[in-house]
Image (cartoon, rainbow, N blue to C red; front, side, top):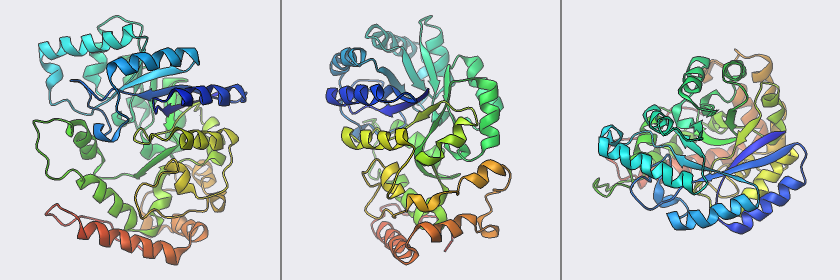
Length: 370
């Protein structure tokens, strides 16, 4: 059996539909939904709170009753990359522990955590809590996987930049065990230099004490980076439904769909069904964005034209050295799976738009490419 962790839209009908989907599959199971509250003191996470489904503690308590009814676990996301050192204040430590205990008493015993210091605080409670080390931990090596295992994590999410490094994935599975999870629809550019700073921005952007005249700096840079080279769409850290088999063979049993900002449960379930079917006919970018475009300039990628693309990464683990100007492998596939003329036109419109409407004073840095 292979397991999926998917974002919660906090809709009871979605839980009911998940139960129905699970009942029809002998190979796959949506084992958990994940999310957080958006009110209160400790609401920072890896996502901008204003973009998430709005949820109070009382509403979450009611939702938990239905999770139990439909036999779907709920994983609480508490994964900021930074808390401004609040966790090192004794009074705040007490508050964090009390908050975790409140959630635990509600029936929540699974948490996604990024900061080692918070994992240690939770460990000190002595409760039966299952901790998942977040993708924000950037676990990209067996040694880091082992670190989080020894720290008490029962599960871990692979650093998305390692999605096609099958040798490292196999080694992480070897040292960590069966709890290794990988995101199937990550839309970040591989080795994005902005990423860790973007994580910190998301962790603090809800704080009223911090004035932000500009809150779209990273989103604009992300969009322009993707548009700076035609093959960048191939370098996003996605996994096609047809390619799950390579991850089974590498030791992965758990998969994650990201997209907590997407509150359309039907689109989410449509996405899940394609992964359960291990088959998808259509635009890959539509699938990995849960059929809700990332921006107005999203490229179209023929999923079936990518048959065979991942195979080389699996069979020849060291062939990709990330020096794209010396290797045209991704560029060649880009020509196969996209209308290049339209894609180039769309990319130029993207760069023109975000450059024109960018509010930040510095000129954005984008990689040169076709």
